Amino acid sequence: MHYPAIISSTRYSKLSTSAMTHTNSPISLALVRQRYTPFGGAERFLERAMAALQQERGLQITLIARRWSGDLSGWQMLPCDRWHIGRWWRDRTFARCVQRRLQEQRFDLVQSHERLPGCDLYRAGDGVHQVWLRERGRTDGWFGRLATALSPYHRQLLAMERQMMHSPQLRAVICNSRMVQREIQDCFAVAPEKLHVIYSGVDAERFHPQLAQRWRQEVRQQWSIAEKQIVLLLVGSGFERKGVPIALQALARLPQQFSLLVVGQDRALSAMQRQAERLGVAERLRLTGGQRNVEAFYGAADILLLPTRYDPFPNVALEGMAAALPLVTSHQCGACDLIRHGENGLLGDSLDLERLLANIRVLQDGAERQRMGMAARQTVLPLTLEAMSSRLLQLYRTLLQR
Image (cartoon, rainbow, N blue to C red; front, side, top):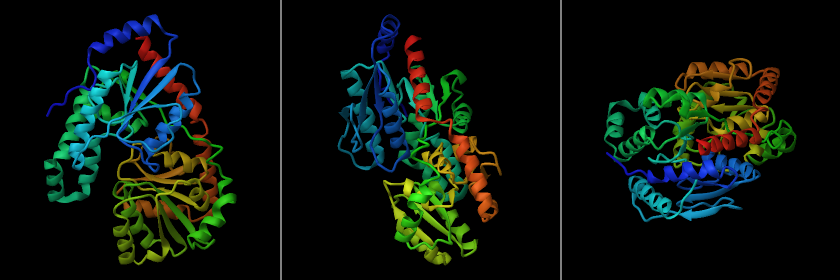
């Protein structure tokens, strides 16, 4: 299956000459992302990264998206919302619309956050799709794996991902973790010099240990959680991928003093509630749905739990660690880049229930939670928004000078 490149190859000769002769001229950057959800990690990254970048001179930002309900202050918006039925058609029509938009308006750099062949830069915030399917296949059974293999949607997405990675027009890939960098090299043999690990930034003043003083009592009262309870916090939409099912299994085998607080939106919300009832832990589970004020829940929690099946690097990990929450996560989460097992967090395989239980039990002791949480905060303090934007801007300028 072949998809046309979204950018004409003739643009590069013009760009090269322009960049070399006008290095001080403003950089026009196009960002491609299908849609905005206020609870999505990729969208929150875009908002933070671009807010930081806009403080730098010489950057003009245009967003190409189907729709965007976030803050667009200082951005130009080019809508690409075409009528469609189903996600296969949705992705296909969006790709063709982006191609037309980029033919109508020229940009120095095009940075895609979608798997679209022909972009200058691709930020692999969603990771590698074939790796996610492989991880999911570990529990799908033969029928589930067959259905995935025959799915037009997955076949299209895999084809677009492969064509994009092999495109000569791809000049750089922004990886949000070393885990993703390794996966791209293993799956597509992309030249190492094209792969740039740039971690997301975190506002360590906003996400701070003092959140507990501000929010702990209020949030626990709101959700009827006793002060003596040890609260495991799981934040994220897409419950299967985030590991909510195994978190419920763990809760069923933990002492009664443990509660699970799940913050995120998913169509499986009711299914997770029913599973909790079958496991006998419904009274210790709180499903809040999507929440804009997520820092309040960091303040109410004792442990950040991310037993993710596959996650390139969730912002939640940085935010929770900055708030001095000890992190329990999996080797399939890009945040494992930062974790020194037993020092600032705890790791295990995403399907290893016994290891997950052992890791949580280590943190039953309050002093150990405090020690590991403060070590986690110290780990992420260098990952500032300014450091992230500086590395991004340096990469843009390097590509233009080439």
